[in-house]
Amino acid sequence: MKSILRGAVLAVTLTGAGLGSVIAQKAPDNTPRTSIALEHGSHRLGKRTDEMMQTWRNYGLGQFIHWGLYAIPGGHWEGKYYGGAAEWIRSWKDMPNEAYDELYKEFDPQNFDPRAWAKQAKSLGAKYMIITTKHHDGFCLWPSEYTDYDVTNSPYGKDIIGPLVEAYDAEGIDVYLYFSVMDWNHLGYRSKLETEEDREAYEGFKEFTRNQLLELLDLYPTTKGLWFDGTWDAAWKEQAAFADKLETEMREKIPGLIIGSRFRPDDYGNRHFDSNGDLMGDYEQGWERKLPETFEDTKGNDWDCVMTVPENQWGYHSDWRGHVKTSFELIEMLVKSVSLNGNFVMNFGPDGQGSIREEETKLAAEIGDWMDVNHEAIYGCGYLDWKKQDWGYYTKNRETGKVYMVVFNRPLNGALRVKTPSKIGLEKVYSLKEPSVTYEPEEVHKDEYFIHLKESKTSKGPVVIVIEPTKEKQQEGTEYQKAKT
Image (cartoon, rainbow, N blue to C red; front, side, top):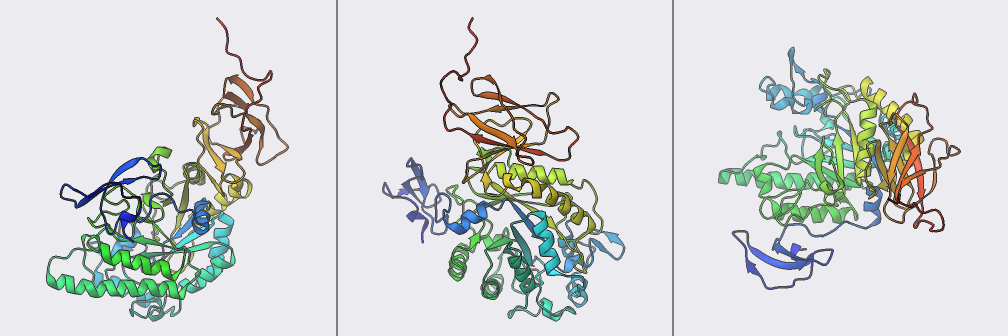
């Protein structure tokens, strides 16, 4: 399907400034727009509205697991400390590639227990998980027909991904497969194509990549989506036609498959957004280790944020340095993400024996305790167009219309300011933790209220107050009258 099918063509083709044809179309809001004609740009304007995408949109909280050979050195080699992201240690000048590539002979994670991982994710409150089937080093955690560099040739000798999928499915947690297109182990991989020899080798690499992706979907048909990485190389940016066709093949394997904006380039090598500025893929993946500040920053797209616990460690590093996030920081990032119509994904990096580190286990328990009480403000919730206040964030349930005030910053006087759009009143206000604790909002101006916090100032963690708003304020005797002068 070509991008020119996204809207009704309204005018004849014009000459673009070195970019090809320009076509006048109508945007989703029916306003005229001008587009560059693209064969491999975005194939859809606006959000997906099917059931699988709505499920993704309502997750709120997810878990990311980075695990592979890099967990064995754990950020160190021959007594030297590697300060970069642990999964990149093979690219370090002090890490001989040949030595790294032999680490598969040591991969024997005797503590790996997929059911324990899945139960921990369940107690965390995660609704989906993403697992690294293959990172940039090329080592595969599944038995691949297309390479010997996989887990079956390690001392462990058996599939990792299959038991993980089964365990998470059993806990009701949807599984997404991470796949790095970049592959340092494959002889045909190139970061850029400078010679005919490069191009010939890369053709073999492309076929290998296609075979592995289709293999994964055949082996694990309950997969809900693919999470791509390592697609920024100049060589891959030239593969618009190949990647577009492959995406179609993958979607045919699993109808409704969810693929983010990282996978394919457009005709001019743009990723995430095509040359017209339209999102490619089903959701935006540009918010890595950062969050949008406002709803306008998201451009109305579906999006997720994937977040490390230390500053930049995904895979296991035995020596976390610098700032390590607390559970309250992570909870605030989660709530902020949901308040801006996004999902928040917390990363875990198991060690070489397959154990989740103590710091991550403690954080998961603390976040899980908060989610046990307050998950109603997260699952199925999204953006509310009320004026944001300094005490925290609003979320709104997409089905019930209930509004949740998630309070992180308690005013000294305990008065939480709420400003509503015109004709929207506060019919019922109560504590999520203790619904019998109700509030009588104090109207201080038209469409502006104080809710006086009753929870103890010593209580742990952010509190949640539920608002059941009216669609229209009652008019008789209850409307606020401005002071007369």
